[in-house]
Amino acid sequence: MKFYLCLVFRMIDIEKLNKKLNYIGVDIDNNNIYELLFRYFQARGMFPDSHIDVEVSSSGKGFHIIIYKENTILENIFYRALLNDDDRRLILSLRKLYMNNNMPYFDLIFNKKGGKETIKINLEKILSDYKEDVDYIKERWGTNEALDRIRELSKKIEKYIPVKSVWTTCIKFEGEELKEKIEKVCEDIYLKDESFKYRIFPDYQTKSGYQLVIFSPNMDIAHKRGLLFVKKYFKEVEGLGYWVRKV
Image 1 (cartoon, helix red, strand yellow):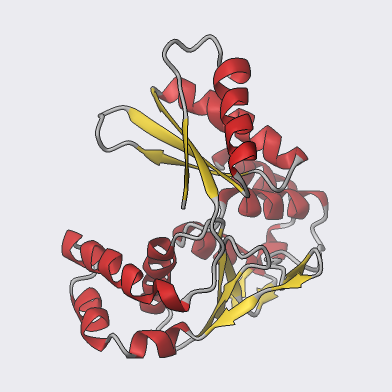
Image 2 (cartoon, helix red, strand yellow):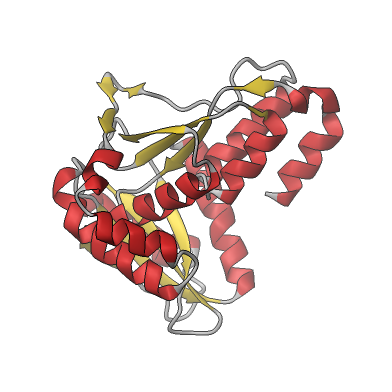
């Protein structure tokens, strides 16, 4: 990400970064309701006076958070990174800006893909029935107690969120060098196939470990992707394995 930022800032007219936008779009590329709630509370705390829309993506396997606030392209980059917008989406925005300083759409978030439209969620209304949980989270924001309460709240509201089940391929590994190699392979696959969705999380059970999680529409694809990583892309890594599960 630092490479793309430095490259883009060197190659464009700095005044273009002051171009005005009217919203900040955040793409959550998985259907984890805990992550949706965490980012929503974060956005609400950052922009208490702004209208915020929440949508289920057209695939039914992710979310959009759209904050209606005037901002510049430079501010947009900062806010999206702070709200942990999908890395690949942010990189693609920067690449497009690098290729065309006058690009009409920098923060592009689709409300329709493959003939399917996004589904709006009135999250504010849903949360109004859980005022005690919401107040507790706001009062203790930034603490482990708040995170635990978000987990509890996510289970309470999941029945109101129309998301689809997905299969995950999970691969545990250790070391920064291997992490960089896996990130490069994942980025290359995504640029050729936008259906390839993944995340790399710290593995808190080890000091230097990580877990690659790949999201797939069915069990067969989940297994095929796992085999590709452990038997082809990283067959030289001893002891590397994978498992799949439905979420």
